[in-house]
Image (cartoon, rainbow, N blue to C red; front, side, top):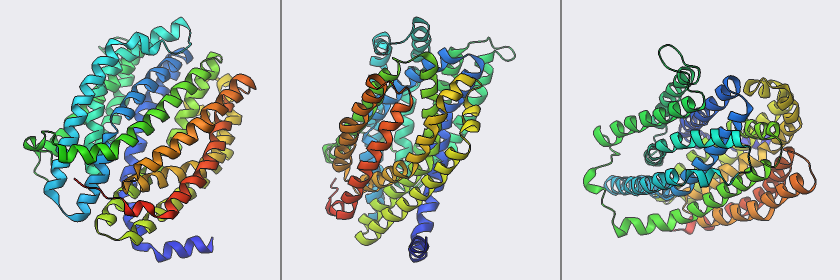
Length: 454
């Protein structure tokens, strides 16, 4: 404890900088997660377990597509933060504009293909006819908002890379409030609006995402700020595309590996009964909320590491990564305690179903136990990405998912019949091993030698 206190006393200014960027980012990430959780809560309470499973499967596909194909934002953040540190604002705006163009093109293509092949995509899951029907109904509507999400993620990455994490938080907050209000009105049929059930949840989320991109457009396209997206810079050029691609393709592969692994785990879980499937979705939501501060710290680490490398201060860059990681671990220990002390109460927020609560209790303890390792790995990964070391992060994620997480999940659920808790047996083992691996990579400081040329 004394060593941690001494470390923070030595790095007070750095700690202040990290928190200043991380707090709004934490708010944004938490609100972004709550946008999905709002659907989960209301669908669970107003419609039922089948609808909850259906929404979970549909959203898993949507986020798989978005996270894979919006990975240019990883490279954009690294380039923008480095350029921001160099104080080259014209180049920063050129990178921002071309990154947005790429997201626009990819977003249109992915949206069209997802809509055309919706039935085949949802059909990969082994679910009941009722769950399939509801998932398809939800998916057809939610896909319409995918382009808005691609562009919103792009705009948020641009702002975060330049150190502005407050604006994305505010916009996400507004979208979140609109989604919750829309959910209540459209799911239940409030006032003159008809009761739309699962379709109402989908339309509410889609409309809220459209509102978000309207707000981002006003900030980045219309207002005259230092960081702007100018139409004249939106033509894609080789000198920006090449470094952006080199930094981003490992992130795209990483996200593909991660999201495909989640889909496969979802397929494995779909072999269980409906209550187990619903429990799995609820547990994922609870876990995703718990590590949002780590995601915020990861964003702060990426931004500040990139900026300090742009200023040629490698020692400060290293100290930034370690400071952010220590905060992440401390948060993980705190959240782990919450999971151990209040598991029933947390589950009760998400579902009134006693069977699902009882089914999930043991898993809550394992989620709590995993928190320090999970948080550490998220934050250190962000620091490495901010330095442009996206290839090593990709390799580590690949090994964690495909040498341990997915095979062990299959072993525990299908072979050993451990039920939904098997997912977290596999998760905690994989994070324990690979948090050590990624720590060794960061300690080597090879990431300080990476050049970002545009």
